[in-house]
Image (cartoon, rainbow, N blue to C red; front, side, top):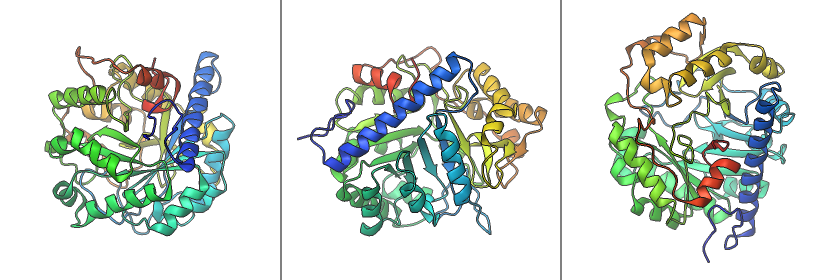
Length: 397
């Protein structure tokens, strides 16, 4: 029997997978509904979801990555992460994306997962350091869904990741997680080089065979010290990606997630809607992972998180700026204007590089706005999921 995709009733799946899927859906749903009520009734602001880059340590050094590795490494402390989780719980926000660097290199991560059974963690990992022991440990927790980042097949993985064996090790990690009974997915940042091999039915079937229950497609955003801007998608390729996603949602067994379009095909940005913000390894509270500027840093206990969201005006002003720019991707489409705005706000560069110079020298690239060529969802299940659950960050219409 096959695993149900969007109904939340994975009748053909193992009990562990059903448990993970149920928590995945329930936590996302509650976070979205609570967020909507706060907005509707003009209550104090707090995002529905938080993305936490817990460390900038990594065992890879990928082209196009925004993370600048430092010596010594920067990471959120166990106390800070627990403070974030406790604060978010007061707003019914219990759904966290866990990023890095490579988050599994944070020594306290498993303990944090275990001590917060009511929270749900979407773990973004390259999968190369997973083995039977830690996969079984994650499976026993029941509140973690790992997403294995696969940036292309063997050749593209070698180019992007800088190692010969990355693709093989990532796939092995995916298989090991599936064997342990986890609700596991794959993530892919789509660029010119990997477009044909990853935006394909063959790739979706490959992932299904390896045990992936879902895939999260991203549009490649060149950033960091090695941005590879010529590898960014053209506007036509972005349209093709959206068309592929919409078509495959009506026929594929694997769940397909994006955070770019609402059910009608309009461009959305989780950051400018306030649905999601990012916290960097150095404690910077940021708009999103690639816009590495902040108005304020977390203190040692993260006890100032509420005041950052509710009293510091930087994120509020940046949400307004991004929304007026068209709710696509202000980083991609208007880098110089964004740089000017950040300077006007006296924003602090949290990148460990010189992100302001990078923005000023960055040539505009197509975002995910369809520019009059919107492609609405064909699947009724995904239309409902976009509205009521986590897929695409929910709350879009």
